[in-house]
Length: 266
Image (cartoon, rainbow, N blue to C red; front, side, top):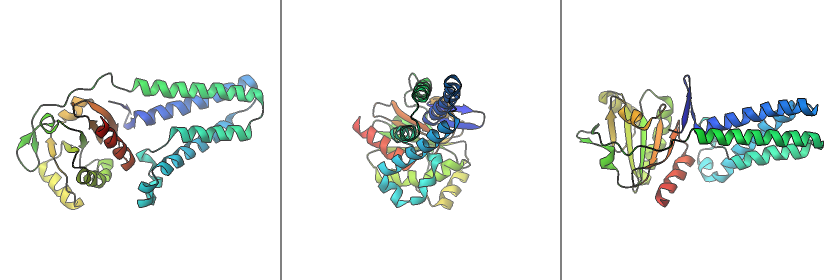
């Protein structure tokens, strides 16, 4: 599963790689500053800060309609939503405006290469070599009866592993419910991990949610089957049963739409 768990903290592979890349860039800038005898700490901070802001603004610009409908989501950075090319442009702009010294430029170029190499290595190291097929074990439906994810499969599918006690699960549920209703060509399955059926029904009533294919997984076997690190985890499954993309953490509408579009294209 493309996620990293450090103690109680869970990071998607993209966020983990970004943290590693930025940390290595900062470290390389400090080392380059010593070698070139040109202090680079202030410049490093400016490049990182402007780069992060530019990456967020670029993402917002690319998905303007989505953010225009809910402007406060501009600040929902915990959902992710940073465009790497926008970030690189912002950092490069700071460098172009502030640096004229050739020795500084050489040091910065080396630091950028270290940061990008660290980012790429972190992305590669968190990608699973292979993903298991859809599990064939029967699970109870909330409304009664049994089925399996393998039975529900056969076409593009979104599997959401969730629990009522999980705050990011609760936050993303209204958006997931709307997406399931608006995309009937994609099968949505909401596999609850460990909650009592009575508790789930009370939660759905309290939140006024209508979800298709709510399956009960009291022993968390689906989470273990896919090697997921925590909740929520969302799996995007192609028609052949292979996981084309997975995400650990609260899913943004932009990511959900992008991955559903990718499923349709397969």
